[in-house]
Image (cartoon, rainbow, N blue to C red; front, side, top):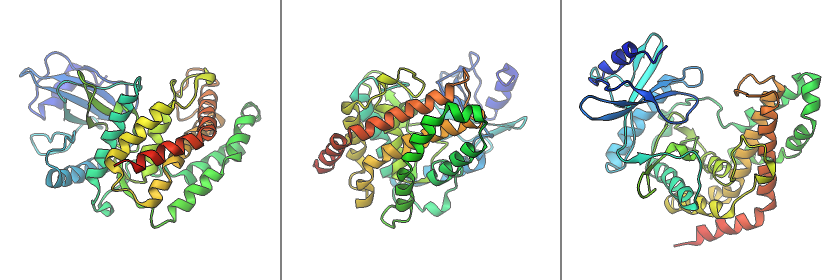
Length: 359
């Protein structure tokens, strides 16, 4: 197992860090293995094993290096939690075919798995907005995709259609109502494809995974400190970051909940995240990007819904499941959230308009 002391010692020796006590599991992420390291000199670090089955590891290192260099030059006071180089100047340690990186632990910081107050939603959204604002102006041509086609809705819709065609009859019958609903809402895909052709809808360096646990908050004040888990920092569209915040902040229950009656849009949380994001990004966004703010929620919820449903139809080959209908229930959860976004659309557009008009 990679958790053996001898392995940790060999990895951390490359950084001249000697753990005391044994590093322990840290955070709630499922993709990378994450550990909190306490050095014998009192310093703390976060050690991660990067999942090579998901990410293009060299692309991650390349993108973070370029972003860190730009921020150091243009925004030297911004807290960018970049990996620490080894003593040999390498960006990661490769041991027995696995890649490890070390980042500083931000003092007095904490992370949460869900927003329990609108202020938390505001602070998290503001941090993602600040990151994007500070990275505005980069030469995106130098950056690489760490997960190709991650938020390419046309690609995901094609996968969904393929899954429908290839699904066993039993699974297709169990999913018939959900399949019909998501196919009926395929205008969301048409809107996406139209936006992709619009020159006023530029690529930006986006985080792409704006769940609230990817923001560090001050443990005492709950003020936002920094964005973390930057593996998906790559060129994309503003609807990715905004949409993922809508998808994961506004409902009082997560995508795992089967209490579908509780899957609703909390307007106060929606208002908080929109105001938080626009407090940093309003002056950067184009008119087309501003007009797509409401659409961003539809885009991400729909895409995640069809990804869950496609995985169910394919026999649960991507997302880990705890029971046979798990992915089907996840897809239904996202369908209900999408329905509530449509139901509250007029009020949510008013919130966006009010936030855009604020001085």
